[in-house]
Length: 300
Ligand code: PMV
Image (cartoon, rainbow, N blue to C red; front, side):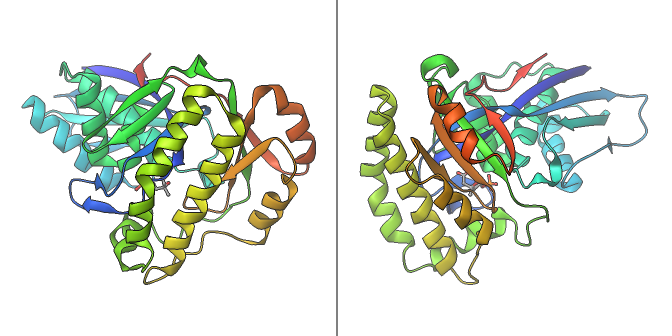
């Protein structure tokens, strides 16, 4: 009863911020993301009656990981203890959320080890219960998450986009995104954001469909700034940017690239692959992780 899965982190082009149901991690709004080829979690899960205890060798939140294992063990009607070994292809201290790739890999490995025959939809909905954005790391390529689960809009080779992550953060986040989601409704701009989203999502889907980069860039930046506006005006306010974040945003002005930022100070610079050299030349002084669109979680 052993399986190993890999899963990518993902970058939200339309962000998930706020929840309809905190316990079930049901999002307040649909979100759209791209899986990241260079930010991968590999997880091996083994269940055995020979094991005395559950053991997690490395994890950002072992209680949350074992709660998720309990969920999957209950589904399978099994009681065996588990050993979990996890590795990230990216530095865990780099401020790149490992919860999406981590819970996606954990879900696929554990469900396979326990011989649960789950569809992609079921795996996505199950991963969501561990971490909301993990639901988007199950399907391939460009992914939309609405309600209980996420599905693929396009495979990875649909569009040669790159996400060049400019690594700025070194310290762990002070406030987790879980706590942040729960306070989103305290921002006077939260409902305005929800009202604006259907039209914005439609524009992003058109940009993806027609591979219109200027249109894509405009929507991505608009949604990132809108989410951070909500974050900064909620109670207590969440400020994830620092001076270097702003410096990077200024540096890419005038380039065929756009930016987006999650719950951290790292800047994700998105561009078309044909402009990679041009963009990287300007970002030479920073530590970078260059990502292509990637497959979703799968067994290896
Ligand atoms: O899945 P969580 O709870 O870590 O939330 C992720 C929230 C953002 O990264 C800020 C936005 C997103 O959609 O990924």
